[in-house]
Structure formats: C-alpha cells, structure tokens
Length: 451
View 1 (cartoon, one colour):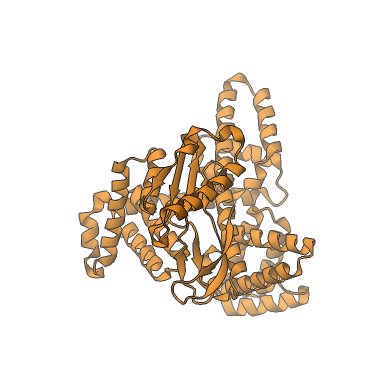
View 2 (cartoon, rainbow, N blue to C red):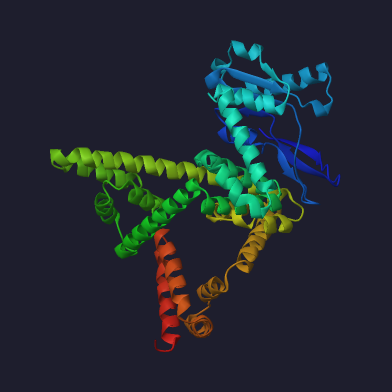
C-alpha cells in the first residue's frame, strides 16, 4: 500500500504531500515491479518548480513464484544498522500482514540484501531469467544511444552506417522506453532529442527502413478494415461481424486490425455464437473455425492487457494532477498522454466523487477536466476545431451557419477530415455521433461552390 509522506523538493526545497511505495509484491502488483525496473518507482514532480525526482526510501521486494525476498536501504539516507533493521522489519510486517499465511515460507527469515538500486534491479532480473550477458547487451544499447546523441548532426548518418547491424527491435524498444521515461520525469528536451533520433534511424538504418515499410503496410490494412466496418453501417450486428471475421480467415493482420478497431463487438455472446457455428459446421470446416476462434481470443486478450496498462498509467497521471496545487503547468507538459484512456479514468473518478457527495474532490476533478479539454482544444488543428465547433452547435440553424463559414474557410479539404472523424466514431461504437457528423458533412458540402 502506498505511504503518504511529506516530500522536500531537492531543487527548490518546497515541501508537499505525496505517496511512495516501499513494499513491492510482484505477484499482486506487477505494475509496481515494472515501475521499479524502469526507474520510475517513487518518482515525484514538484508542484512549485516542476522538477521530477526519485524519493529515496527503504524497499522490500517480494516474488513468491521465485521464493525471492530482497531488502534495500539507500546509502544516501545515512541510516545505521539498527535503523535499517527497524525500517526493513516494519516493511516485513506490512508485507506478511497482506499475504495469506500459506505463502509465508522459510526464505522470509533470510531475505537477500541489495547494497545499491542497480544491484536490486539486477537481482530481480536474474530471478526472471535475464542473464549477465543480456544485461551487458542492454547497457551497450544505452551507450550507443548516448553516442548517437553526442554525435554532431552532420556525422550521424556515418555513425549509423557504422553501427547498422546493432540497430534492431531490441535497440528501438530501448530507445522508445528511454524517451517515455524521460518525458514522464520532466526531461522533455532530451525526450524530444530521442524522438528525433528515432526518426533519423527509421530513415537511415536498414532495420528502420524495414520497420517503416511494415508500418505502412499495417496502416494500409487498418484503413482497409476500417472501410469494411464502415460498410456494415451503424446498425451492424453480431451476425455481420461473424461473417466479416470468416472473410478474414488466414489473415492475422486483418483480424488484429479488426479487433483493435472494434473490440466491443467481440464479447461473450459473439464467441458463444461462433462456438455454436463451429458445432453446426461440416467436419472439414471445423478445424479452421476453431483456429479462428483461438486467434480472436488471443487478440482480444492482448487488447485488454494493453488497455489495462493504459488505464493504470492514466490513474497514476491523474493522481499527480490531483496532488499538484496548480495542475496547469503539468497539463501543458503532458498533452500527448491525455488520450481516451485518461479521459475515461478522469470522467469515472469525477462521477464517483459527485455520487459520494465529495464536493472538494469533485471540484478539483472538474477543474482538471476543464483545463485538459481546454489544452486539447488549443492544440487542435484549425480544421478539427471547426468540426468540434459544428458538433457543439446549439441547433440546426446555428450548425448550418457554422458549416457555411467552415466551407468558405477550408473548402473541400474539410470533407475528408469529417469523414475520418465519422469513421472513428462509428468504429468506437457511437453511431449517433457518427450520424450527426454525416448530417453536418452534408451541410458543409451543400455550402461549397460547385466543383
């Protein structure tokens, strides 16, 4: 459980309340383990100066599946032996109090001790089967990234060519994760440099060019599948999707795109209907349909796992904004993270606070919601702002007037953008919004001069 403490910013010395985690149980809290391994555990952002930093605190890590228990007390805290033993003892009592008695085994009485955070991370990774050789390879990737960043722009292509064989999927993943972590810690300037480096590697490395080609092919597949979904119409039912997936049999790329675009369609009733269809099918067709069902189940599980991770990250970001005396600067710094998952979490928390009658929390959440939406609107393209304005029109006359203004300002280039937003709404299962966009599109087109 997180512990609420007073935190002092090392940059401006402002004190503010925050929460830190000191016991990490990998079995019940995999997200905490991921944050520990990525260096993001107990990272706080100062509400005064915006500096991000990691709060040093004694830690206790537990993984029951590997009989692994590790204690760690940061040297910089200056704790003597007695203080360390007391701190770790308190954490041990907290952990054992949360676990069923049958999970408390002999290794609890002889926990390993990590002298450094790096040692703690390496011990955990070794328990997960990550060898010293694999860790050395990861360090080499980080060093190569640092070399690219320190290379003058005019020499980068040459250095990329010299290291072309080292640029692979693991390297690109390391680069991407570094960028995400630095952005979350408030180092937007370095994160931006890493994003630019990624673009350069996509253009000038062999693997990057292959990756770009694959991405183009995937985008083309997604567009094709989205068009097929749109053809089904807003009133599409379970039978329509059963027919569509069977048309995609043998093409995992199309099935993956379909599940990603229309996950709500693949519910329990869908799989029940597919199972009944398998039972009624000729024997020669059953194996293929069973493979199709297994593939769809696997793809839906992957989408759900990704959604869960996105929700956990959204909850963490929302808590940071709630704790900040003034969330506006943090909102401006984190615009790319305010996606559908974040807005869903924010809306759910706002509704829950209102239902509980918690006026203070609901007011804070309402302020955050309004500031986030304002920041997102400010960063929209002019065309999207025009579409948003059309959607917000109070009545049909006002919408027609705004449509005429938009037609005059943006011309026919606005129509494909309306089509794209309409398609997205239809795929997300919002047929009424999609229908309204279709009506607004008709108003804009009617206001355009003849082609």
